[in-house]
Length: 367
Picture (cartoon, rainbow, N blue to C red):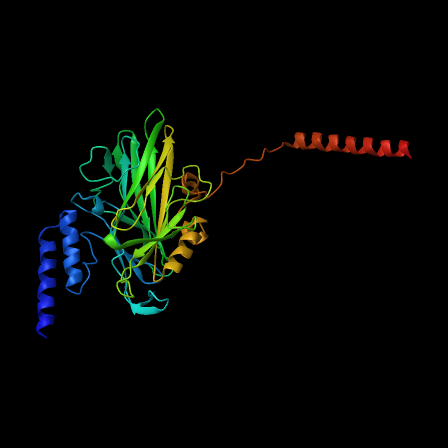
């Protein structure tokens, strides 16, 4: 009983410390998280101003909205956390399962940065080479879910850097299991602009991050990979974190990965990026998906499925938006078939009739 009281007091003190200071350094954040784990608890599963959406497996994603402070992991439209709302059959070291309410998927996932020197590198707050999509104020929602009766897509305001406008939408379905980002880039200037977009991440698996596999069939993540999976290494025979699938691109897209760093181990900050050119007035969309599952195999299977953009992956997108997808092949451009006037059709019919008659006469002469 005394130990339980100590645990409760310790956890309460730590939570109060967070509430008293919304902006914490990454060192403080990791120290708090470590202390909470030691106390028998996970880090708080809500962020300041977060919007929570639950997929059809019961995984709840917390999306950063109306964040008023500047840290890379707390950027607008990034996710602060994803955790299950109930116990699931989580896989164990020896191939079995254990009932566990997996959580702590992220410490800040899918931050969007604009690289001003067009290099793919990890973006950080205060780095003059990057513009972070941040402090965008309140977000709105759209797109009523198929079963939940609530809007499933969170829409964020535009942020401008020079002639480039950036906007983000985050979607979580109620009839499937993933999270999706649409990252819009529009050139409002009068000349072409080359853009490099970087996606920065902070995984909940911390220094125990394990890269499980990738679309190329190994644990080495390369620019040719369309997806990869990761999880927190087993402690004993179990792992309490969500197993993750990260979807970067589709096969044959016009804008593939320009660079990626996803190595695991003590590096829980994977990042990747895309370089592309926008003509005046042109909009391109960079799309990313994340998957959370109770098993590594299920995370890999779902990530692989999403790269082909099944109908559920395109929910809440228009045909126009799909044609603007840069790192996936979605809706193909419509091929315009020339129309023929009535006079043209009559002329064509006459020509075909004459050709048929000529063939017939030729066959009669040959006979």
